[in-house]
Image (tube, rainbow, N blue to C red; front, top):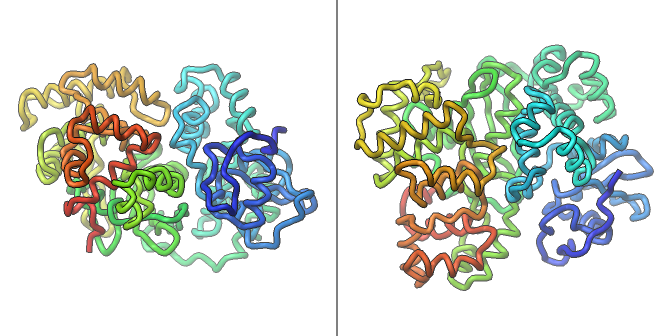
Length: 512
């Protein structure tokens, strides 16, 4: 079993520096310092296993740190579990924010981790994971073991255990239903896994928290989504609210609400900023979709980002430093459905935010799948590529060139010749988008930034970016501004959020 005890470089904990680019680059001394200083910035980067107690913790665990000689370090919770350690009942390491490197990186391991988080192994098995990635199951197993100390089955098992704990502690569902919803093949496997990971039976785990009262509506689950501080909610929720598609999204009572198309059914989520977490309320037609829904909500709000590393790099530019200092921790507002966002990006070409909402709302009303919202306000799921591919192009009220762009896009998405998802190679996908009629750099870069989650995507031709550059005295031409932005790599998508924030547009303001 490979532990994280060797490495070359990396910022030391307790020195004011940010975590290194990879858990594997944190040597033993840095790990020990992070644990002794209870540095929450390292939560999710690595896990501390205590040899004398047989438990594993996040670095910021509030208990008295063990002696260094009793510590060993693993790059994933699954690796800790595979080595026989149990999760700490105080710091709940399985609930820590995910490692930010899976969103930052674009290699095989990162793409595999994003797919596992989206529940692909539970739904399609390791062969399905391998098929999506275009590698053999053996290659994927070997690379995940080498870097994370656990293969895809063990990583998926750890995720099932976390989902089970959430359902046990936040719902009154019977244990048999929880086992099924969390993805376990049998009640016995569910019981054994929970007991092994948490050193408690499912019944004992539920007894540790106040009894879950009846849900506000059937299938509703309330939970907290953790993140690494700081987090600036203004641009994040402001953008989502200002661009909300009628019937699919809304801002109500301090929460962003939207409908979700999920593997086993549909859902409605309400997300609102709170002290130290994002309050999340999910209503699901099928509880098996819980893991996927949480993963997509975390991606939507970019909650696994490393704001300290991002802001440190951008603050080094004198033009950006005042913007970062004014409101640190800006995230990139992303999406819960990559194909949906690509369609909306096409609808938003060369029109205002309000016009883009109107076009998308018409598409939803005409071709989206209706659903019932117990709270009212939301009426449809956004239409799938398959539904849009079947639409008569002549019925689409838009310029002919944009109509051609849209119909070509949805046809490629529907027949699988273009894939936008966690498995996508970002550079290759961007190039394929640019080959489609009507796709210029702006559309491809916005899709890369918000749908593919590329932290370095840079829509340099965006009007808001160009206006911000003028206000800040940055180079005006795309070529010159691209050159200046080299210093912002690999976080140019975050620089865009700070540049946009120089304007008074509603996307930059937390709604009332």
